[in-house]
Amino acid sequence: MRTVFKTSYDADINLFRHRVQAGWYVLLLVVALALPFLLGTFAIGEMTNLLIWAIACMGLMVLVGQTGQASLGHAAFLAVGCYANALLQLNLGLPFIIAFPLAGLIAGVAGALIAMPMTKLHGIYLAIGTLAISILTDDFIVLAEPLTNGVNGLMPPSIEIFGVSFDRYGMPGRLYYLVLAVALAVIYLYRNMQRTPLGRSFAAVRDSEVSAQAMGVNVARTKATAFGISAGITGLAGALMGHFAGIFNNETFNIIISIQLLLAIVIGGLGSIHGAFFGAAVVALLPQGISITRDFLGQFVGGGSIAIPGLESAVFGLILILFILFEPMGIYGRWLKIRTYFELFPFYRRDMFRRQKSYLKTERMR
Image (cartoon, rainbow, N blue to C red; front, side):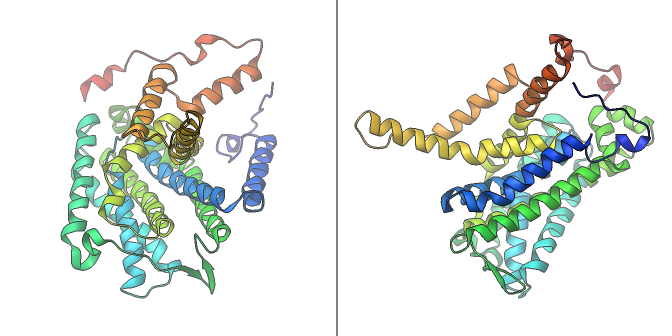
């Protein structure tokens, strides 16, 4: 059992609770840096895909997990970031190191502008509004064919930074390290944002908009800021996703991607960076697991590969239902319970994580 003795207010805003926790994260970083030397080309590609999904999940987590605003349209911001990054390089000749952050900025501005008319929406109405944005973005990509090449799609140029090339097939290790660097930068931004007054405002709006407004928080501006930051991070993931895929069109960023993103952060655990990575692992690795299992069963029964239409969607839906029923706090929530059990043993109580079934009276006044 580890006890943290706080002797100053700085202890509440430190990046790590104690040195042992910092040591574990350093060890995790060392493992991540060593992966290209331990895994094959295919596995490194899957780890790169996982990191890209984790960046996208962190983007959505800022909005849903930190601010409590439901969104089913973040595939639109993936598309904005992806197309902006490619067009800035293809049409304007900008290098990747400039086009990439500009793509995130463009996606962030788009998210903030879209949020302005939606600040009065709550719950399912906000989700429907963002869903409409995603559908309209899909149609816009097709209609703006002179700019986006329509359904034929675009091929982003190879990534080159100061003469060093990053290619998925030729040099998968370099692309992995590039995506890892972006993921670490986003983690650092996210973690520091949580410790700022803005991050506290996000949490206040999430817990009770009426109470947040009573404390002087500008709810509309806070929501718009959350949308902008969330869309910006998601746009960076979209830009990397386009380079990872090699070619993309309007169908690459369909409504299923938005649903999978929301699925990932719910399964991983809302409101935490860990939850974004756990959820990304489920979304990125589960299809490969299903494919491997399907091929194994096909060989086991003596036939070919078993093809079941809609199998992945059914498995995703089943996993979501099971988590909502038995572990609403997600994978990270289950880990917290296990860790707390061993930290407090034998004083752990089962009711410590019981779900709160009552609501604040102020919430009924919305």
